[in-house]
Length: 223
Image 1 (cartoon, one colour):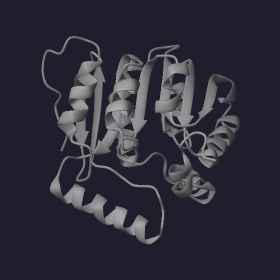
Image 2 (cartoon, rainbow, N blue to C red):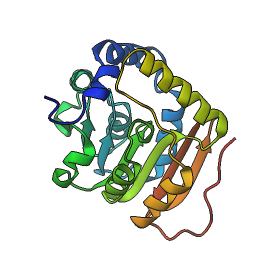
Image 3 (tube, one colour):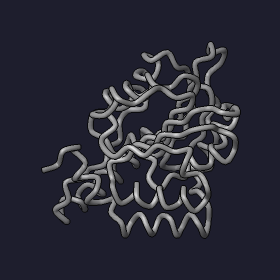
Image 4 (cartoon, rainbow, N blue to C red):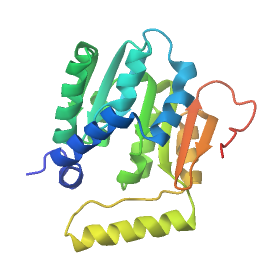
């Protein structure tokens, strides 16, 4: 019985994949888009800040923020394998006592999860079918800043995701990826009172940070 609704995630994000991600991180550091997200969140890394890392995998984002001065983090993830690796990494780096680990679907667990100063979803929106619930509930928990890495709203990206999903179907995997419209995501975040503050882009990914300060100008996309 899949009590948390996480079987499709766990079937893809298994222990072998988690170990591979950990080994790559130890060799090369964060992926390019994760580095961009951390750079855009840097102005909000006040001493003692709290962090909510949703779908944070092996813990790269919240652990980096903790090392930079944040006080406490909550990691919510639907993959037991990734949570185990994240816990091991936190123990190895001396951060374990400052992190709470929550296993399950954030949307289902949201009522029990407290707001945080910084909320981050690094390549998570593309993994969830109900973007209204995921973005609406997570943005509402951001006291100061809300950071996302999500697929760009482009035809080539949508095609790539359709091909990826075809591959999952051929492998009889229940997991699917999604390219939710950027305008819809922005509208949902705005509904929580957050404004776009900074943005960068790659060919495939959009990296954007929103905050609760009054918006004086539009976010400036990167190259």
